[in-house]
Image 1 (tube, rainbow over the protein chains, first blue to last red):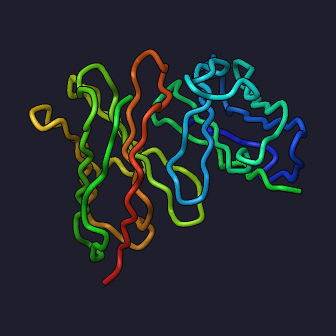
Image 2: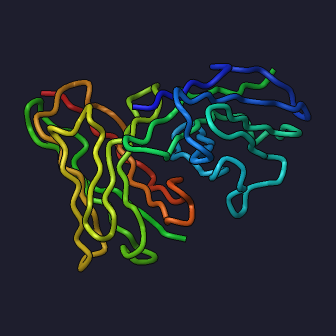
Length: 107
Length: 119
């Protein structure tokens, strides 16, 4: 199985800050990577697919980059509704696997 | 936008079989991958497996010996069967869909259903 490792596991930030979350794959996955946002008690929402393509309806302050084994999710200017947990997922091979999650908290 | 809704028992006894159904209420079963994902309380996401509209399946090796995912195109539903459940199978179970254009990303999710394994 491909292991996905996110860092940091948690981060505290303020409204307006720029935040970057990293996801590393244990082997190359091309750009077969997605990012999700999950709020407490809710299902995950897809933010980005193919490593850098913004899902329809997702604000442009979210962006993704990377290929191979290193990927990043950047939120350019945090809004109050962005405080949540973020997961990466590789879809290069089965079983698909998720990172352990990054909890974004209000400072 | 595809809409999904999970249904099934909220409580299952140890050693029994968990059966969940996901109903696709907007859109069609055709053309997509249909997945099951679970999340134990307070923990991360685990991919269980998926089924393509053609009927081909992929399973997580950690669960493969106990899992079956099936499709009923006449009812626009797909199902998860998990045999011989134990307490670690307690989780919120989500169904999700992925169109091939999303390259494996799951664009639509059900709300999730909590399944507790307990006697």
